[in-house]
Length: 515
Image (cartoon, rainbow, N blue to C red):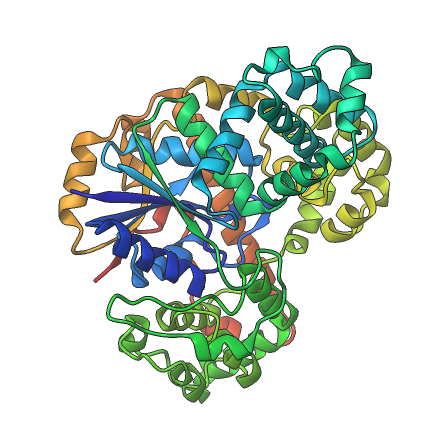
């Protein structure tokens, strides 16, 4: 049984994700595709725009077979911990034999070389990195320079220990600043370590090597809209294609662009959804949600979203995912980091410098800065913009604030690493026809498989239950925030709030099953 694993956020699911799944099946002839997916909070230090159950349903409707939740402790961690946990989760299934990931640089030998170097961290790397940080470079820039210096040294001598670049800090300074001799190398490394997907690709390869995992890496070149591109390229709709294997062309938009579109029109979407729910429109048909309508205009005709928004989404998302998005919007508001500002501000205001330094991902220097600035807090986004520096990136600071809000500490991270990152496999959803995969999973998994959270106390040890409670807390906080935002929305009629069903608690959420 050929089973391929993917680590993803699907925030939200778009054409590029569907293209990856289709290409994986074409290249590997996989029987099943298993996804390790982030839950309600994601690696950039923010809430997912849609809840994990909706996103799992999107992925299953568009070709995935089984969705497993990546625990919140690791889903919101640095790239190194995020990647290690994702790889170990897939390996823990005992049935995933291939790890597929996308990267801007689809050069597996080059990515592997960088991964090997970062795993070994030879003396030259450590000295050049320390020198760069001492000079005020950001960690990513200093790491790029250190890797470039090492690769240049490897080309100059078979044994890096004989390289004239190794030695005192003065020698390291000459190596790091040798201008044109290393300029081309630095640019090449910048292409590898300068983009998010490449960084994760390197981290996946590091984890496979470090933990000696029997996973075969498969890298796919990421095409279409760039990771941080916030523009939807409607002209790319002509490139969209639906083949026999369900493949789609290059994505017209990144997940960032789709989030930007949705969040910038959140009030307008809420009003349209309320009007529809009040009886002025029809619910998305079951056939559309199941993917039986291939025309992007179907969602427009159904009047589920404002036309100008739906038109852009129709060229960015597979039809089943778009139908599920519009269906979800009738019952749940979109979430943004600022929706948690009151809670984050409260936690920040009550924390001392020592507590802040113990937050997962924090340092003493960052803690002192947060402590000094906490009385200036007005919202998450403004606080992040005002306090990021060359040394402290926006995303790192966002993760620290999120960890503070969720109560995740360095001690939690250390305990999780000590127990191998993954202590259970929580099934978020599966396709009904993947029964053989589920049977194999129950036989081969090296950790307990959870389908009902109520079973956790019986089958997990106390320390694992304590970490699972972090996931339960995060999921329930996300759900309650949705309820609060929805109830406080003054742009929609009160009758809408009365008709809208209350969401199920985290403990009551059933596993998503897609025909």
